[in-house]
Amino acid sequence: MKKLFNKEFILYIVFGVLTTIVSWGSYTLLVNACKMPVFWSNLISWVCAVLFAYITNKLWVFESKSWEVKLVLKEAGSFFASRGATGVLEIVFVPILVKLSFDNLFYTVFEKMHISFGILFTEGIYSKIVVSFVVVILNYVFSKLIVFKNKAD
Image (cartoon, rainbow, N blue to C red):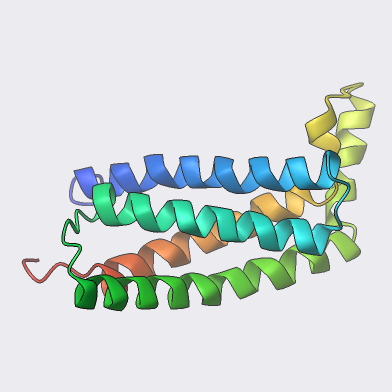
């Protein structure tokens, strides 16, 4: 268990939380303030989050300090490809869960509790949260085993 909770994993979680804040924050802003549809808000928030994640994962999580063009192109290519694969999952499944009224379960609970905090009623936010948990796990596996694999392990 100690091996799991090493510096790399802890930093991945910390920057993962920050990446999630970038994703959910931009999503909420786009849906609420900009009145954008769920699909476009989700797509744009995903792009913002992936850009943030690449930089933080490269520099601090997996400590890939080299900016040699060949290495950066290889890392960035595999990072964006793997995030593209999990991004498709997010972009497809969030609207599907919304259409299936997944979020309504949460809205009903909060209404019965007389809680009216606006962000809790953002369309698609609970669908986004559930899908995000699956995506985070897959992203770590791809980053660790493919993108930033450490040959010293």
